Image (cartoon, rainbow, N blue to C red; front, side, top):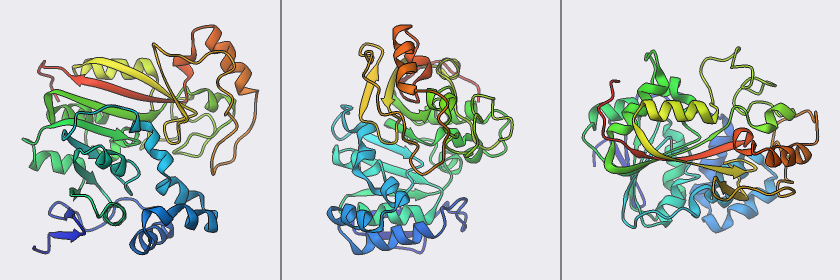
Amino acid sequence: MNNKEEMIGCVRLDYSLYSGKDSYTDGSIEDELLNLVQQYDCSQYMDYICKKNSWPLYYHLSLERHNILQWYEMKENASVLEIGSGCGAITGCLLQKSLKVTCVELSKKRSLINAYRNRNFDFQIFVANFKEYSKVYFDKKFDYITLIGVFEYSELYMQGEKNAQKYFLNRVKQHLKDDGKLIIAIENKFGLKYWAGCKEDHTERYFEGIEGYKNSSKVKTFSKQEWMNMLIESDFKNVMFYYPYPDYKFPTSIYSDSFLPKTGDLKSNNLNYDSERCVLFEETRVFDELIDSNLFTTFSNSFLIIAERGNRCVKK
């Protein structure tokens, strides 16, 4: 073991591409998270969270985060590249599916949190920007690649590229096997909750997404049609949309185009977690109108998108 690597339990952390400085942080809460996962077993997390009554701890450590992919059948022993693994909210779900997991994460501290909470599993974390990882390990291919709450930060990951989103997708495609699948979870910029008075999740501004991010340049979410255009342009095929409700972070239901909600199904609409919000109209009634008008998929609060790798050569 050299100073470019570290073992925590069965987890290997690779620092060979680490810049030496974390590009982002949530501040002192990450210190508390690290202390928690070092001292406690995962079975004790919820008791600690309830005692502290802490939303950030709940957000990062709740097993409800697994709901976004727990149901999705993946090939046993398949290889998975988790880009932007953060504190490991989804990593544990992938590992429990007996998958061969490789993580790429910008933040060393978040990678340590992930490693300690999942230290009984054998997997690897590269502490690096995916752009740099992709250049060095350009020949690595995976059965699945996940972007869970990541693609909205394309410009952070792909700094210096004119069309960061297109460049990101093409870089990701490079690492998929011929029959590989890309899995994306992200907010819908036209999600009904934003029209109804919830702040945009990343900028904390009202109507920021539906007004085209006029005050923001480093974060961006997209509509369903924008996603279709981007994925087709980057030669992904067999694109499937799913609709996590109330959103992809803590979904209680996941709908699809072949199994859509019925009138009266969508009643959990007043949550905005830790952020203030306005209440401009009764979302349940509006959702019912959208369902009756076959418009639910346009205004779903979040998307889960699964797309297969195409074989056409696409310019970066």
